[in-house]
Length: 241
Image (cartoon, rainbow, N blue to C red; front, top):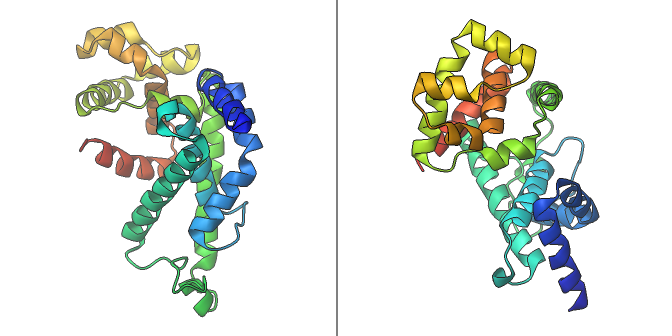
């Protein structure tokens, strides 16, 4: 009981302090690994497993969304990790158009991938994953120059269709204005007042989602072909909310 009380106190502290959140995620990384491996029914290959990253993000989402009335924190975090991993697997199956090689075949834990030798496209998949990781790392470095992290972007993402539409309206205008882009890259400041005036969008809306807009503008105007492809899929899903 005392341990749960201490954990809840740590979770509430992590809601307001990113360093506290990072420490808490680090402390519970074994739990996150265990939940991910349990879901996948296999051992993790951490340098390659996107699923572990998704589980870590889900754990942070659990920190942000937890309230004492939801019961104990760890079961709540476990439920959210499973939910996000399920969403990820469904997206992967839709993209690939076939059953995942990690899909369990039975209660013994064997997967489809265990039944076949490595396929010819394995190297291509590894190259694609390395390219994606390289883009993400480069984007993280560029975002840091603007004082923005991936966590900031996730927390600043519009949740309502109307707000999402307003942000994209601003983005379409901004990315097609060379003078604005030059000033944005030079000053590292997002021109909220100017864009509010030019696009007839409330200034407080742009201020609330400024970090999300910074990331979107960098992605849309600085290459990042792979990330842009994923982004189109995410935004299409978000537009239906």
